[in-house]
Amino acid sequence: MRAVVVTTFGGPEAVEVVENEVPEPGARQIRIRVAAATLNPVDAGVREGVFGGAGERIGLGWDVAGTVDATGEASGWSVGDEVVALVYGVLKPLGTHAEYVVVDADAVAKAPLSVDAVHAATIPLNALAAVQALDLLKVTPGQSLLVTGAAGAVGGYAVQLAAHRGISVTALAREADEELVRSLGADRLVSGAEGGFDAVLDAAVLGEPALARVRDGGTYVGVIPHAEPASVRGVRVDAVEVNADGSQLAELVRLADEGLLTLRVADTYALDDAAKAHARLAEGGVRGRLVLVP
Image 1 (tube, rainbow, N blue to C red):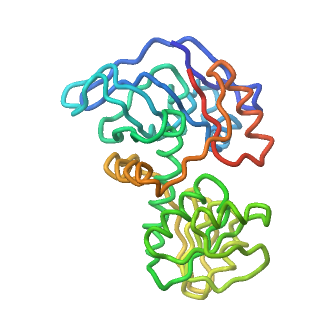
Image 2: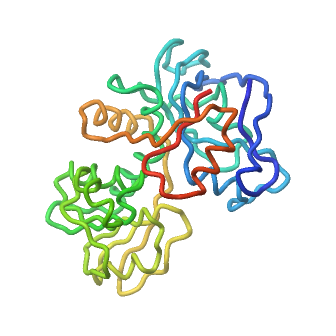
């Protein structure tokens, strides 16, 4: 089978498509024939060497939508099931950017019925990051929440999920994205230095400038573990480390099928054109996700 990997760090030209043996599932695992797999900024970070792993062959890809084609003992899934899943980890020999991938059974959920595999593949990493970040914030109706990067993939899901919980959301985004973030459920948009929020979800990874917008004693949650700024003014500081939770993913799929999550695809690329997809991501300004299709 073909799989996308990096063996040296660098720009999009470091991305390789190689031949690899088809992996076999073990106990409580399944193998998915990949129909679509999303390209995320974390893949670019792996490619650039941000997470280490020099001298290793590292597989790219976290999100997957596809069909179960083999099962291990006690997996609880059946061949032919249409599924989505998150394959967690920055330094793994094979990721979801491949023709087949093996996934732990408890990281899997039934695929949404209302959308195709390309759109379904945008759910796992970004929506799980958004909902788990909101859970860390512990923000409740009546409190003020600012989401930075609200027009992005994680930020957009966070806006919708928070609004669904009855929370009033302020979006930090470009003025050109005001119509988009309002359509996602933001009550208003700020682009200046307004602060005093009870909670900030820093999906744009602004760090200290985002922390400065939190009121004294409020809460800040980032989306990159160990990269969050130091606490000041009694602000509780945390960062979400995404958990591949199949049950939580199933709930997000339900919300997508009910039309409460907007699944945004910017473009699709053939697996063999993975380097071109990385180059497009590096250009910036992508609204929605780039998706690889084997």
